Length: 333
Ligand SMILES: C[S@@+](CC[C@H](N)C(=O)[O-])C[C@H]1O[C@@H](n2cnc3c(N)ncnc32)[C@H](O)[C@@H]1O
Ligand code: SF4
Image 1: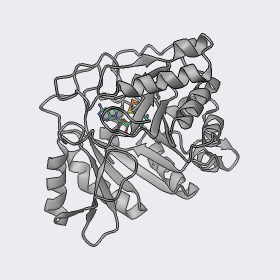
Image 2 (image 1 turned 120 degrees about the vertical axis):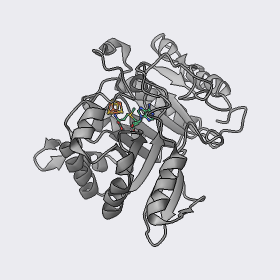
Image 3 (image 1 turned 180 degrees about the horizontal axis):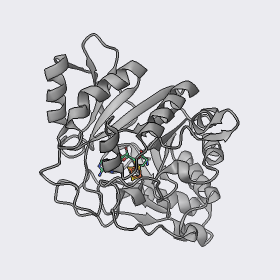
Image 4 (image 1 turned 135 degrees about the horizontal axis):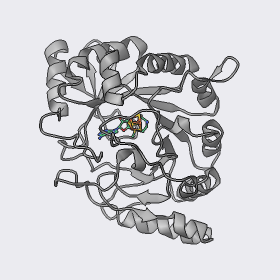
């Protein structure tokens, strides 16, 4: 699947829920959340069918996300089935990490169950190592659980674990070095992400926006020039660097300030309520649940995918003062 601008689509991000056990201000509104009704969410069977069709069209990698995907019942079985779809050779999960340590059977954590279900990579959100600040950012005092979850993920032996840190001036700029050291001591990839305007709350302001270039300068002030690694890629939009003398990798996701950000985009998103979104930073979305539930045959759904790809924009429109009408939590980060 290739769009008009030469983006080759091989990566499907699948959001399985709009629900979450945390309340990150940059992701969801703070007022009481109205979740989608169950009937408005794609069943696992429906989702697997759509992934199978995407795989027939060239998708090889799926990342399961949300909301918090690990809050959905039977998620591990679903993920195992995703990995069995012909053509899908890489399954990842994005999680806030709070439920990785939960036991699903005596002596079996969710982390190890995911690994046994053939998950290759886990992305875990971690914006700070300060417990009080973590509770402020996420609305929940779950940092100890997340740290335990990271430990369980390490013990489970995933080929790749990444930590994702959303940069926020005044909240976590003092955490860049502690997070780097935390990641280094555990051999984890760490990525710093610019905050994007995807919440309905007024979170992205000039005051709290911290550009990746500034974070990079602060890191270089401590560790010397970072060494670019232009050939290292993880399927996502991060550019990676190494600290001299360390094998550790640090990624920067400059969604707002990197003008070439969209050039290598290989992604398509499926929301939990059955919308295909060709770009996170665009209002465009196409309701594939409707034809699916009206009994569309595979060729019709395949054509639906191709039509959506054809509408994939050249680049996101966040920079043009974009005001989205949906929240990140509902789209799937
Ligand atoms: C929406 S979350 C879903 C998965 C899981 N609940 C988690 O927190 O990792 C996926 C990623 O999007 C990031 N994210 C959410 N809102 C964001 C925003 N406004 N700007 C940049 N990244 C954001 C989160 O930090 C997280 O790393
Ligand atoms: S970023 Fe993840 S953990 Fe935070 S509210 Fe959004 S879905 Fe939940």
